[in-house]
Length: 332
Image (cartoon, rainbow, N blue to C red; front, side, top):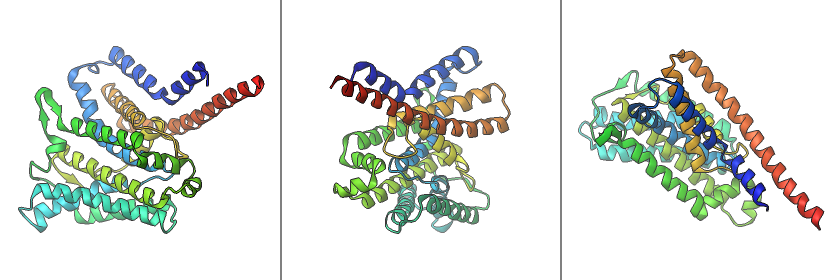
């Protein structure tokens, strides 16, 4: 493959980093109060929760599936843990409550994975039903909100260190590094990409597609519960509407970041770019005094743009590969 084609393919796959740089530069120049230390920290801090959800959803998208239930898992998992600590078993260890939060998320993911991989239930219908069920249970269990949670339970999402840097940033960075290594350097990660590219062919090659799918949904549930833990720490409370509507933002972030809707293509670094783009846009529009309703509409427009970019990215990549193949045909 020629160097020019390789470069064009790289640019096509990393367009969002270029857009991110342009967005950041323009806002730094033209938006008041944007390019200051406190605001940059604020953008990163408010992006941590979306980052967890985008990673979970992006992982399932890589297998050719998707997980709509993440936003309800985000609320349900910490809701159960909070009720245990404050109502059901007063004085319950917050550290065990954190573990329970993660376990609940994992089990929700495993259940989704089993229904999709073993019972062949459509992933849209399966995860949509779980989204509704879990949100309904959360609204039933917590009519209002639960406050006065132990500081240890809120530590990851609410604590800050020197320089007013949130602990959540370090936690999110750690998760991204682990997920990057998982996808790029392990058999499990390569199997995820293979399944998304062609599930039937992967099965014939000996990849245990059902097991990989179930594990992928388990990780998605774990990341969703981690998002709930961060959100709980940030607001020092569990609310029954926590995460509502965020699945669409997570979808936009993952697809903007290069995760293909058809599966089999995408990266963790791309998802980071997608999350940061949404964070900068949301922050800059707020600083400019744009109506919250227009900001909400903008997020919907970004989902539409994400779909167009995904379609164009695939077409451009196929065109470049076809052009390279034709060179070899003409030479021979």
